Length: 102
Image (cartoon, rainbow, N blue to C red; front, side, top):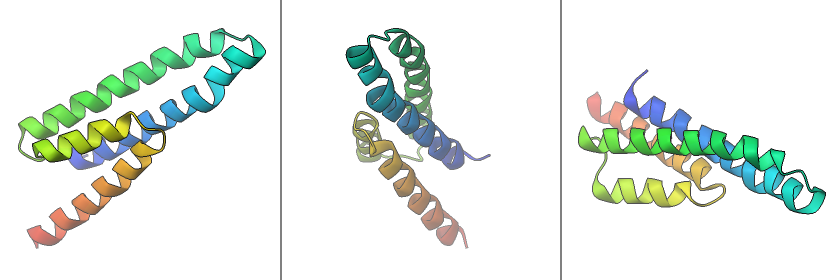
C-alpha cells in the first residue's frame, strides 16, 4: 500500500470512530446512563486520531503534502463527516498523481 492509500484508510477509520463516538456513545452516556460506551469508544477513536495525525505528518515530512494540505486534513478530522470529505479529497489527489505520472 502506498502512503496515499494508507492515509485514505486512516481518514475513513478516524471519521467512522468519531461518528460512532458523537452519534452513539455520547448519547448513550448522557441519555441512557451507559458511561461504558464512551470509555470503550473514546480510546478507540483516540488511537485512530493519533494514527491519522501521524500519517499526515509523515506524508508532509516526505513532501507529499503541503502545509495547506496538512491544515485542511487536520481541521477536517475534528468535524463530524469531515473525515469522509478528506477521504474523497485524498482520492482525487491520488488520481491526479497517477495522471501526472503517465
